[in-house]
Image 1: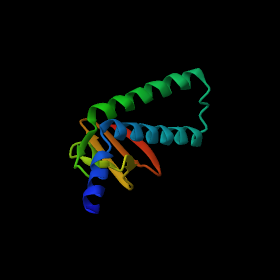
Image 2 (image 1 turned 90 degrees about the vertical axis):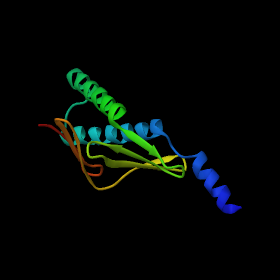
Image 3 (image 1 turned 60 degrees about the vertical axis):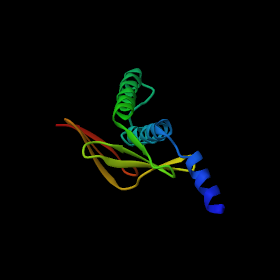
Image 4 (image 1 turned 180 degrees about the horizontal axis):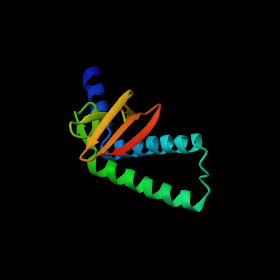
Length: 124
């Protein structure tokens, strides 16, 4: 009976795509802010605000259009790129960003990041 109750809890709280998107956007936003602070860029500058908003919109579009979330019932995985790279893990209503170095390729755009060390976007 306990196994059924735990299984029902996991299935009922398995995060969907929207939760994965939200957590990834928040974490990337924090990472970008840290990068700007480290570069001592004045984020109050109107030009910097416009560039920041455009960059944020670009990341939002990339995440919304490329993130694929697979629900395995008890947990879910967020993947992006081709070949796909697992970037998030969801369980019990929470989403966690997977640790380690990631290389995500989407056509001519490549994202290299380690969520703890920062984000590097390059066009090829």
